[in-house]
Image (cartoon, rainbow, N blue to C red; front, side):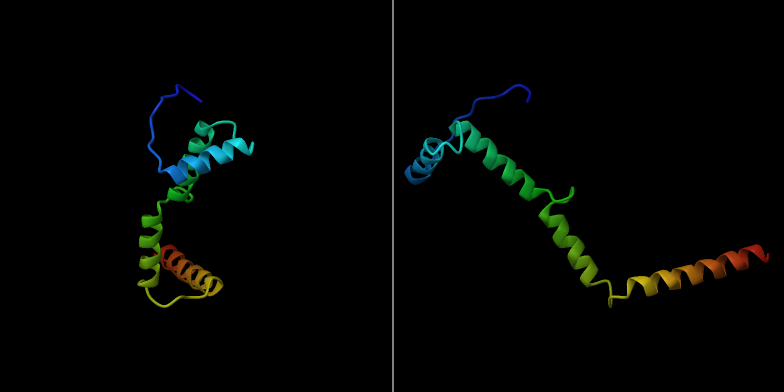
Length: 93
């Protein structure tokens, strides 16, 4: 970890008690560890394989509006047939 910066966070009494209880339980060594764990979880929830949830939503919508689904192996066979026809036409020139 690089340089650390100290910040101050205000919590509700219930949240402060939950943080204190987590440290007392031994699950965390410090309140700072709890904040770091929470930030890491928040950050990982924002990025999934490099995409934000908003980008995933846009990609899903794009897929849903792109037309009827097609069978993958059938689509590959059709692409191969088109490619072979294109190569055949090009070679016959």
